[in-house]
Image 1 (tube, one colour):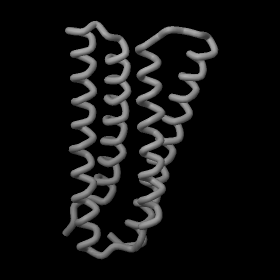
Image 2 (cartoon, one colour):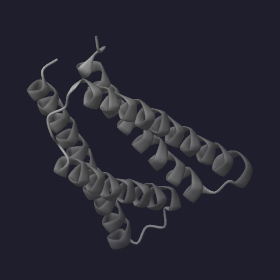
Image 3 (spheres, helix red, strand yellow):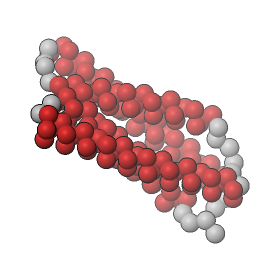
Image 4 (cartoon, helix red, strand yellow):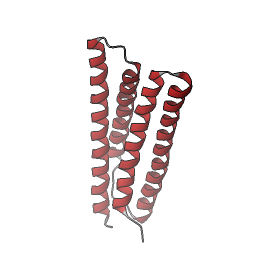
Length: 144
């Protein structure tokens, strides 16, 4: 793979991450605002919205920070990028597993809808980030 092609793929990845971050912040904030305006006491939705907006803000910062460091990569740089992507994918799946644990514990043992909503928000973010990272890994393909 050529360095300029990889740079284009990385830029596309960061743009998709930024788009996901923006959708998350706007969606979470809109849901929170709707709950406040309607004066609805829905802990599941409130905690889901908080998680969604907070993760979106963090993802936006990560995308902006990573954009600043974009540069052409040689073979070693490409391998380093793939290592980081695989690590991030593992962490993302771990986030989703922690979120699922929160959902199960919140529902099964505590009957706390706030915990269920927060867990669902974490599961959604973890799976979405894992899919974004896996997409770039597949586009880069095996290094030879």
